[in-house]
Amino acid sequence: MRSTAVLVFATLLTLPSTYAGAEECPGLRPRLDAIGAALERRPEDATLHFYKALFLARCGLTAEAVEALAAVERHGDGFLPVVDFGFEPIAPELMSHAAD
Image 1 (tube, rainbow, N blue to C red):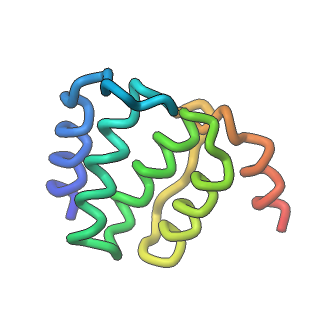
Image 2 (image 1 turned 90 degrees about the horizontal axis):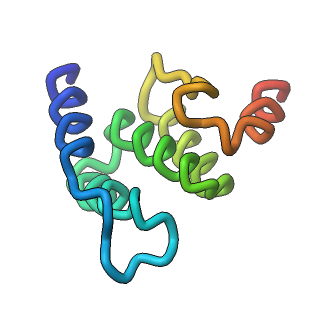
Image 3 (image 1 turned 60 degrees about the vertical axis):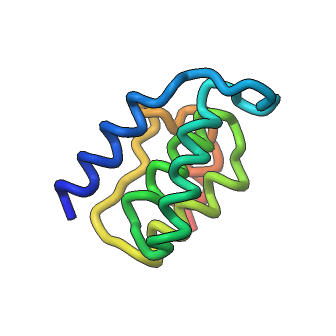
């Protein structure tokens, strides 16, 4: 599992940072598309859901990021959305869920 996570993360980091035609978060759209394709094959992979949440948060897509984090919680343990690791845009939402 760990080697899969490292491989997925390394692949995502090497994808092109622009995507022609994407209006919403163009720099991260290729990464989100790659994660979406991988999730079609492995829908219960918590690592993929975590990175999906991370990139959605960086786009400021709060509801979608929180939904992806809910999938992380359902499918895996040991993942923590650290605010200063890319979840800054949705920090208020994370804090409100932590209080629940």
